[in-house]
Image (cartoon, rainbow, N blue to C red; front, side, top):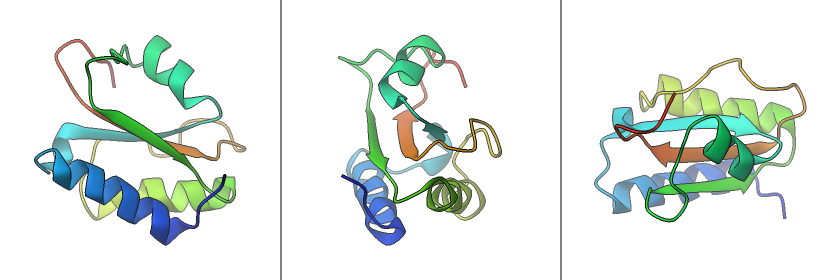
Length: 100
């Protein structure tokens, strides 16, 4: 179910803050299928790494959320990457085995 921008920002902030904050240690991105992207492209260990995702109302909202985290909170991320239709915003804590 899609959430509005403020709800997704709060959800992600609560998750990151609950795991020590330090926003530059986190990556925020967009995907149509976030689990697949996390596993195949970023090499996130789904069982042991910290990660979440949420579905935005549309791709424009998802991009605004991604921009908020990159510009305001200084997370890592592929600003402008992904497809124009990607509505899922995902976040994971970077690790030595993950790939940005």
